[in-house]
Amino acid sequence: MSGLGKGVVTSSVLKMLDFYGYDAYPIKFDGYLNHDCGTMNPYRHGEVFVLDDKSEVDMDFGIYERFLNKSLGGDLSITGGKLFGAVINRERKGGYLGEDVQIIPHLTNQAIENVEVVAKRRKPDVIVIEVGGTVGDIENSYFIEAMRQLALKHDTVFLNLTYIPKMDVVGEQKTKPAQLGFRLLLQSGIRPNYVVCRSSSQLEAKTKEKLALFSNLSTDRIIDDSDSKSIYLMPLHFMKQGLDKLIIKDLKLERKSIDRKKVEQWEHKVGRIVKPSNSVGIAVVGKYTRLRDAYASVTEAIVHAGAHTDYKVNIKWVEATDLEKKNGMKQLEDVNGIIVPGGFGKRGTEGMINAIRYARENNIPYLGLCLGMQLMVVEYARNVCGLENANSAEFNSKSKYRVIDLMENQKGVKQKGGTMRLGSWRCKLRKGTLAFDAYKSAQIEERHRHRYEFNNKFRNTLEKCGLVISGTTKDGNLVEFVEWKGGFGVATQAHPELKSRLENPSPIFVSFVDNAIEKSKG
Image (cartoon, rainbow, N blue to C red; front, top):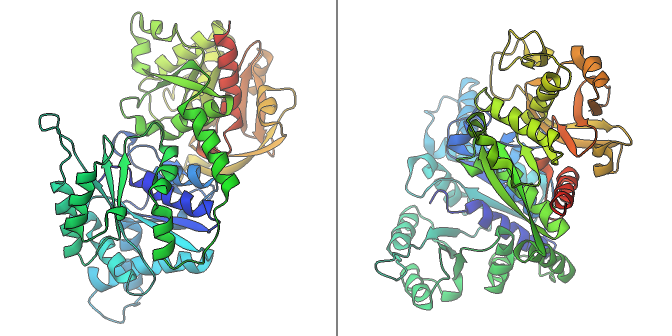
């Protein structure tokens, strides 16, 4: 079922294989007919995740990268839109030799071909395929059929993630939804090798026995996936139940010994999330706070930085529009750090600017990400440089002081998907700045997703007023990092949260959390 956490289960399987030294890669099937996630509203779909190669993909890729601690490519994201597009293009070129093109076999063959191309190119030991959506839906039915056919050609095992509700009025775990879902899979020609049970409380013995009976599986193949204090505990939780050994045996993989040192390092990091030594409070001021998935990578980057410093970071979600109301700023009085993340559109931007000014004037550590950098420049231009009504051209194209403007190469762009400044870009940092101190390097790479940039026409004016340009593109043309003096106030046009991992946290997030901790100590 959609929303149960297939991304976490997929990532946990990948991590377990990684502990043994197997080279494993994920593939994600998404049934929607969009070519990719780039044009999707974060309120509807959650965060758009961006890869180094400029691909805009499902947020599950963020989970994969954070667990595997390696960068992935857009070839691993297969959408219904990409499949239908490939089939239609091939038909138009006569690639089907006059056949009447159908879902089966042409579309399903295309799905299998995409998987096999990945296997041939990357040569992994294992590919872990996540089929998005819900069993029984039209949207992913052709993907499920393609996987049935794939299993006829390659060593394949199936894992069914299902939901086990527990109704308070009854007081017992109910297995009927899982039984019906399992039956639907059997009707599709797929017999799962394992059933992973998502539930609010630990799976009871009688529930396991009942599911084993109805699924023709032994009880050791009914796996508990109950609520946990951290998603990063899940690989360890599954290993305690023997799922790692079952998968390795069923796939007939070459036997390898588990890397105990790697597991212990993971356990140590996760232990700092579950049982930190102390805590600190920060505010995330955004415009999509009612759907936390819109800021999934920001949340995880904060968690990673907290684990690194052995602090639990308590996030206070602040809706930006609330800071435009009377007494709205009181929400920021009890925090020791403020983050303004990315976003598009005018709504809430004045509230974000209010938050940035509050951070600067009260010496509260501030971190701006993409839009958060642009609005930091706007706030500084207005309230320090005296450029009245300074703004971004995105929000007020008639402003006399458009300190943020549309990139030159974006002015003729009409198509929305895949046309922004995307992917990994190299950045040059100035020594003696907050950014340089955080990264401890003069050359870094971070990922981008935006159309608007710092307007160089105002660069000298802002620098004369004290704004520090601490990072630029390699040629020095585009501004990447800005800072204010006299406290921790730093912002980047990039999205450093996209490259943060538990084992390799984002340096700028770690530096921000360190400063928030110092602020909390007075």
